[in-house]
Image (cartoon, helix red, strand yellow):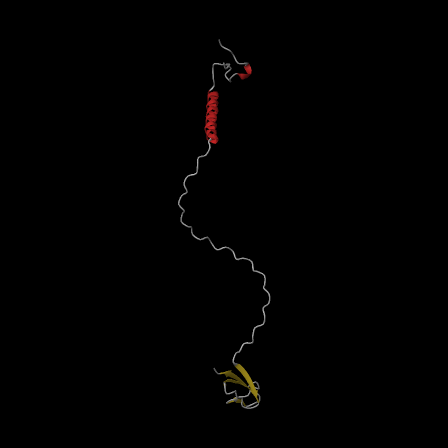
Length: 138
């Protein structure tokens, strides 16, 4: 017994497609659907298993190289002003005279200056005043 498909399902040559006949596209589609169902079954089969216990801890690896230096941080706030310190002792003292300048017995005359522009004559200037610099000896 042969059953025929209605005319709207006929192939291009005008021959009707019977139910016993299958086109090659139908077989390919069936293969694809079966393959997808099998792949989904395999993928979902692992989902219902309970994971086993954790394995033993492995050895610690070697330390890696140091990374690059980071950017400079922002400047901090200014601190409070400190107390005044004691006066320092430089061991220098200036002396001024209209003639010869001299230092104390514990000091040495290390420099003579003539602010009036005159020439030096030993420890005095040709024009007044004469300024001397005395250094404390140790």
